[in-house]
Image 1 (spheres, rainbow, N blue to C red):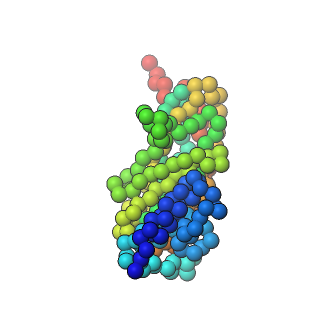
Image 2 (cartoon, rainbow, N blue to C red):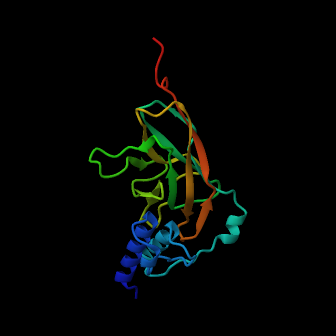
Length: 219
């Protein structure tokens, strides 16, 4: 029989550690897939453990993954004016692979920030067109950046398609930011299959062009 209390404690451990609200020393059950890390792969493993009557699927895809094209998570270069808000797309290319969970760290340059919601409780980060309504987005400040999680407890769900936007982030440039070209980066990208096996994608950068004339039209 499966001990439901252990399952829930593991579920909470994994989610809290991934988002950075507890220390590694606090983790008791979080490393579900046994790879020595706690990330979205363990979240997927927990979903399997809970919904498949305690039968945890072991990662089986390592050999197959070696022959596939590495997935890429990135943001296209964009322009923004001082004081302007803009919604940007986080894009995922994943040819030949289906993933169910996603996490990444976003580092923005000084003077460009993610907008908070109207209640000032959380960042304005939404599901992209490739994520169904069963996905939840969570985000917290970590190590000078923001860790973003796209998670689902539905054991059959996966990110639709092989290219396009997965997360939408609303950012704002400060009123006093100087014109120029700045860099943002996406780091620590982990994608999980439904069985809990994971793939880490290479970090990417994108240029942000700040221009006082951006968005102005000729009269």
